Each structure stands twice: as structure tokens, then as C-alpha cells.
Amino acid sequence: MHTTSTPFGLHWPIADHDVAARLSWLINTNAAEEARFSRAGLNEQIMMMRRPVSIQRAYALFGMLLGTLPPAAIFYKMFWRELAYQEPLMLLLILAMNVACCFAGRFFGSKLSLIVNGFERGSWTKEFFMALSIGWLWAIGTGAAGGLVFFGIGAIFGASFAIPVGLLAFALFMPLHRLLARGGMIEAGHLWPLACGVTLTVTALILGL
Image 1 (tube, rainbow, N blue to C red):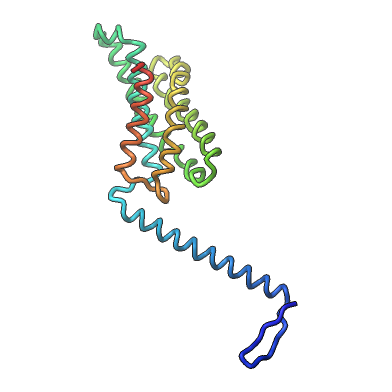
Image 2 (cartoon, rainbow, N blue to C red):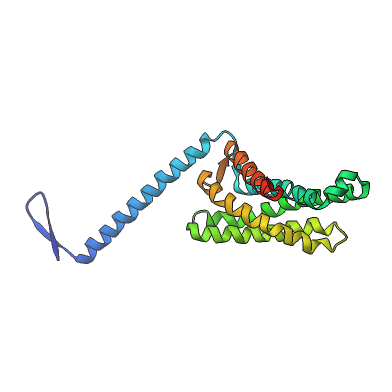
């Protein structure tokens, strides 16, 4: 039991549960104020962005780049003789597979981004494993779509070739995107160097550069 005094010197008892309730109220109020100011600062950072890009669009663009350049490098490594001799049918087939990978990469990047938002606010360990999972799913979908053009049987081979690409690329992209994004938005001037840098790194590894 505690007591409190009034300006007239009178003392009134205060029950312990009243003190605990007031303390709890103060803690909750302070937490709410901190969250409000934090959100206000976050909104200000977003407003200062010249060209903000949402998570869904960022992952769609990254998926498109990743579905274009690395597959082109793989096709070059596999079919360079046919490309050198300029065989028309093979050139058209390779081009069709590359276009399919490009559109599929964009589609799956956009859809899988819906999973990302919650994990970008969680622990780094969970995000790393989620990046591998998303990379694997992206690779299965994109690789199979591109390989399907190769008389259907190429879907299995396309997915198997795409898995290492997806795992490495998303393991690099997701943590870096988290560092640069603010409130689910990323400045376009930061996104393009990040997306191009990761994609070109993976492409260079495929080509052995």
C-alpha cells in the first residue's frame, strides 16, 4: 500500500493495483507515441523519394531481369555452335524460350513478393531461409515455363538449370532490398543498380567471367 499527498497535506492511500494500472497505462502511451513518431518519420522518408517503387513492382522487375539475362547466358553456353552457324529454327526456339523465361520471371516475381512483406520486418535468419524458398519457387516456375517451349520435355531441364540461379539471386537481393526499402517502398535509383548488379553477377558466374 502506498500513499499520496494533496496540496493541503492530506494523505490518501493508493492501492498497489492502481499504481500498476497507471504504470501500465504510461508504458502503453509512451509506446504508442514512439510508434506514431516512427511512422511519421517513415512517411516523411517515403515522401522524399523521387520515384518510389512498391515491393510487388520491385520484385516483378527483378524477376524479369533475372528471367532474361541468366537464361540467355545458359542458352549461349549450351547452343553456341548453333548460334555461330545461325540456324534459323534453333535461333527462333532459343528466342522463344528466352522470352518465355522473361515473362514468367516477371509474373512469379510479382506473385511471390506478396510473401516477402511480412518477412522483411522479421528476423534476418528467417528472411534468409525465406529468400532461398522464394528463389526455389521462382526458379521452378520460370525454368519450367521457359523449358516448356522446348517440346514440353524441356520443362524439367529448365527448372533444374534455374534452381541455382534463383537460390543465389534471391539470397543476395532480398536482404539488400530490405536494407534500402522504407515502409515497403524503395527508391528507383536504388532498385535499378541493385537488381542489375545481382543479375549481372549471376550472369557473369554462368559465363565464367
